[in-house]
Image (cartoon, rainbow, N blue to C red; front, top):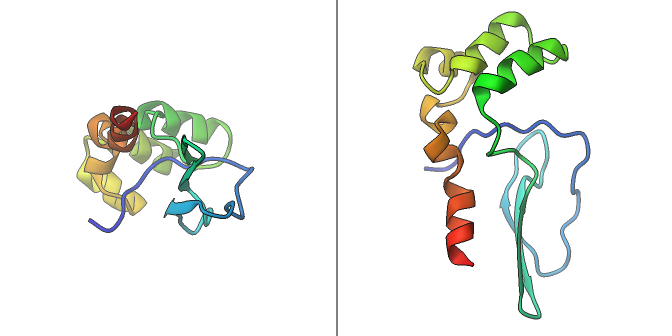
Length: 112
């Protein structure tokens, strides 16, 4: 698969990677969404998106903050279990399921 959806709600962002860093993910919101960097025995992996955020909680929060309308907030809240709601948001329902959202984090932890 060429990409995946993940909650990305941040105002600060990395705009330029350090020399030797590897860009792992980016999107229209932020050109650097994930990166890896290894140097002098240190292995760093960082993301700006939020795989830990449950869309069930994020939808209502986004509505309260005025960042989403009620319909979009409801769709986000049920997006992991409702493929039509996910489709209206331009994402895949399976990407919002906890097991999929946490794959990258789980793989990184297993590599340590």
